[in-house]
Image 1 (cartoon, rainbow, N blue to C red):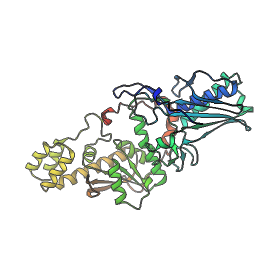
Image 2: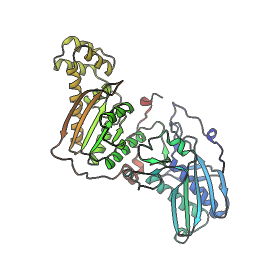
Image 3: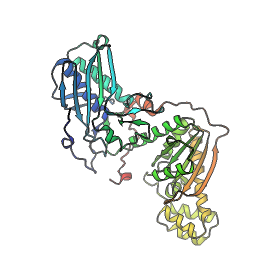
Length: 421
């Protein structure tokens, strides 16, 4: 079946706007509900109303409809609102068919990834349809059965199979973190609230937490927490014995990354970053983009004085432009003791974070060069005494969010000050 391109039917994004959209989970639920209504009633609805996990409703219009005696297939066009979501305009489809066994079977088809590694809250081999979307699809299929004139006990005696697919999912997945999470062959069907909030940092933070959970599950001894792609590449050169899954890019969410490592009983956490992030960590900033969490050059000048590098360097540092400029000044004026002190202070802050989270973990901070895989400074220590704690709660983020979807975005903020869009 050849499917049309419907991307032109969704409004273009406004980079300054705050229009909300709907998750892949909501679109999958809508497609499954519309297909169920058509299969059981013999007629397609012009539009379908679905319930969202947060108790709201949404109305969507099915496209690409096909109906036979045995199955119904349709798609929804994903509208992500003003968020820079890679699935904006994609078709999210469902094929609902009859089966002999009673109950509803939910599966993933073309373009929906498969789970290949434990640690993200879904069984290995399952389709990458997260817990809340699974519940949302099942609830809306149940509503469809009633709307089609069947009783609420229909699935006690009859069987249906809902297969979710994303025709361009494998291509879209190349622009996601799915391969890092061990999800192969397509995208994930996501959504905790059912809605997409423009430039949300909550979903970004959640992806970091999931990556740490996966690393902890599959590389329990050591998790390497890097500030970006370049520092991750350098870390793999420094520690070639570790599997790829042990490396996680924290982006700006240092605190969330280390707290998740503690939750899952990681024994050793290695923080690798460049000068700017190392300075911010030394200042005690664990979400490094928040307003006011800028490099404090007075703080750096005081460090120069504390370690005895001289007033001339301290004065120049007080007027520096960036963290990298601070490093260049120290390199040019024999002031590397100040750089080592910053690394030591960053380690102290990370150790304090681990202790506050109730953990005991070996912690190491490694400062690297910007343009080459060279270690400038390193510091290491132990948070707590003895071996790492036994993790008290190793439930996945997906499982915890599923318990209370309404609070999933409670601490959300607009991420445009990070993306500059």
